[in-house]
Structure formats: structure tokens, C-alpha cells
Length: 319
Image (cartoon, rainbow, N blue to C red):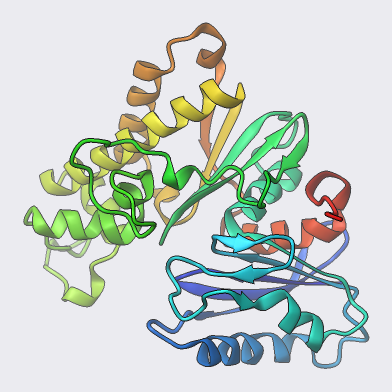
């Protein structure tokens, strides 16, 4: 049994994963916003303790965490979790589970591994797995193997520049990155600036400010709210342009998109496909297909476990 952990800017999740990739037990909690390093670590420990009580030995610990990070040492500095800067997450977990291997990678890379191993990417040799949620990230599978890059951050498509002139400022310090436009909080903030107020899907009654979420924005776009439609079109086109660039660079045949916005449907995927076909004009790039990820909320846990359970494809030891 593998203990799998998925750490993101919105939620932390943990689960026990069997050898075939089945999640046999899981739990999740909101990520404390604005918390310091100690509080974040305490929250994670309190999440995993009930899962491992009574379990006779954890055979390994797989972790997906937001980046960037020092890999494979597992010192993490997630952009959306300012309380952790150079936090030794892998070492801390190794201390709690002595004798068990601990493997840690970028959460978007884990999602890509999950979709390739057990999800929508099965059978694809060359794919990009993306997550569009609190942040935007990705993982590359080329020739059937996970590509790490020199620092373990290969595939980080969220920082491909899609609006070089006058694009919004990104958390990385740059301007016009895909993440600055398409991540959920940035997208809803833009929509609110344009006059959007979230409505209840059935009644049309305006909701309180606390319900300003990408999910509500997507629902309003499907219902025809003009500002919500424009917001989704803005995000979809940015995604399509970035995917076209990645496809030309890596000769991809498939891109899967997971995370909260992947459920937005036509308002997002329509403009995405339009921009992709507009920019992917070289013949070999035209074959690429884009589809929603299929593993849902368990994808991060399955991918984290895959670092151990299918390590021949998704893990490379660095000396």
C-alpha cells in the first residue's frame, strides 16, 4: 500500500493507493490561506495520520506538490503557498516514515503521469498533461516516459508567455504568462472587474462574494452570461495558443486538461480549439487532440502513487 499525497494551493489530499492504482481510502482538507510553514505542515500531518493509523507499514510515500521545487531533493516553494519557501517536504515525510522510500514531484507532473498510466492518456506515447486550477501547470510524457528536465520542472506550461505586450503580471514576476490569465482566481478577478456577479444556476439570484469561483463563472458562461462567456473565451484562447506552441516544440499527439476549469465545457474548450487550430498550422501539429482528463479528483493521488508503483516510466533516480 502506498501513501499518496497531493498538495495544492486550494486543498491538500491524501490517500492509500493499491498496486493497481485503486484509491482505497482518501481524505482532503482546504489549504490554509496565508498560513506559515509550521501551520501548513501541521495541517498535512493531521490529514495523513488517520489514514495511516492501523496500517502495517507504508511501503512508500508518493507526493505531488505545486512548484517550483528543488528536485529530486523535494524542497518546495509553491507560488500559491507563500508560507513554504525552500520547505524540506520530502525530508520531513522521510522522517515520519523511516525506511519507506519517499518520492516527490510537481503536482501537475503527477497528474500527467496519472492520466498516462490509468486515464485519458493510455496508449499515447507523446502527451502533455495539464492542470488548470489555482495555478496552471503541466507534465510531459515523450516516448512513453516522463520527462523531468534539468531541475524536475519540465512541462511547466503555465509560464509560457501568451500575451507578451501588456499581459497581466504573473506570480512568477513575469508578464503575460498563461497562468496569469487562465488560472481560476485570475480569471474570476478579471470577470469581476468587467462587471460579472455570480448567479445561482437555477434561479438567477446573485450569490454572495464568497461564491466568486471559477466553477460559478463557468456555470454562468454555459447559461449565456456575456461577461462570463468573454472570460472563458479569454482563458480558452490563451490555453489554445500555449498548447499550439508546446505541440510544435514537442511533437505531441495528445493534451489532457484536468483541474477545476476542465469541467467548464464548450465555453472554454470551444475557444481553445479555435485558437489551437488557428496557430497549429504546421502539418505534424494538426494531429494533436485535446480532451478533459478522466480521473477527476483522484488523479493527483494516483499520479503521486505512480512515482513508486510505475517508477520505470515515471521516476528517474538522480545521482
